[in-house]
Length: 115
Image 1 (cartoon, rainbow, N blue to C red):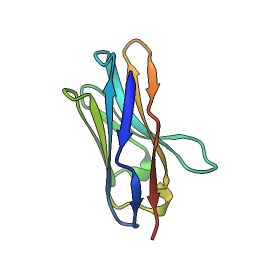
Image 2 (image 1 turned 180 degrees about the vertical axis):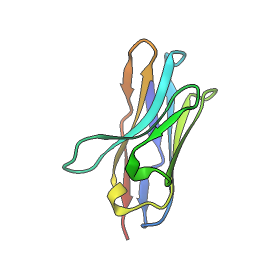
Image 3 (image 1 turned 45 degrees about the horizontal axis):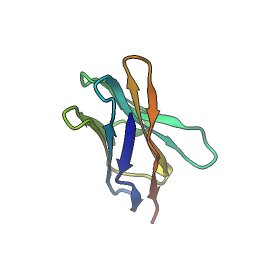
C-alpha cells in the first residue's frame, strides 16, 4: 500500500486546515485509516483513527476541534482541523492498517500554527 498525503501548511492560530491521504496499491484489505503527528523533540502520537465501518477515535487534545472522515470508494482519509493551536504544530503522518496485519505510513506533511 502506498500513501500520498497533502494539505499541510502554515496557518494562524484559530485557523483551519484539511489534510488528505490517498491510498493506492493493495487497498482492498485496508481496515483502519488514521493520522499521527510528531512535534520536534516529542514522540509520535495518534491524532485520530477511523475504521472501515466508520467508528472513530481521537486524542483528547483534539476532540471537538478535529474531524476524521474517509471515502472508501476513493481509498482516501481526511482530517479536518479547526481552531488550530500552536501546540498542533507537527509533522502529520497518514497511517493505514490492513486486516492481515499490515501497517503502512505516508511521507508526512508539515502543519505549522503560528502568527
